[in-house]
Length: 153
Image (cartoon, rainbow, N blue to C red; front, side, top):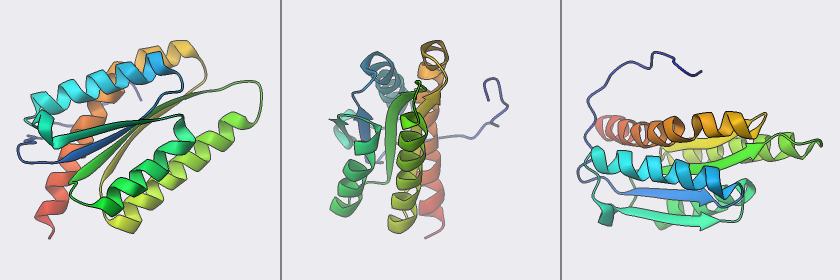
């Protein structure tokens, strides 16, 4: 929900290693998501050398790259970036449901925080309206959840 009060939490990304998987489909949107995410990670203190950013064709390919990163190890959190815009067929639901469920399954299977910023919107205007905030939010979620999981170990 845009404008939601998300609360404030002090975030420090120093020393964290973050993996980002970005879908290229709807590249104008996903490039903006990635730019906002990377800028926010930098603002939170994550070193550029500690960010591993890869691209895949579309949202359905994001989970397999996340899984490969999780299996490789060495990350404190991962970020999924993509954009699925409703069309005239059932394909929207399939891609949205399968990518979302797969991202969640990987996070749970590997006990690795994954900030899911795969946008699912009705139209391009909604995607454009969310691209910057959701990219920033993904970075904040990744850092916050990495901090939380570290504190629970």
